[in-house]
Image (cartoon, rainbow, N blue to C red; front, side, top):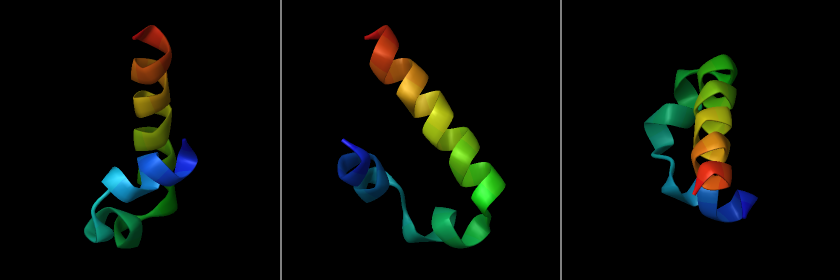
Length: 35
């Protein structure tokens, strides 16, 4: 699951910052759980 999430993220996102990455991860996890 985590591997798929990270794979979907572009390389630029990783370099952008950890705070943003965690926020995106949380948002995606919420969507995954909702669906």
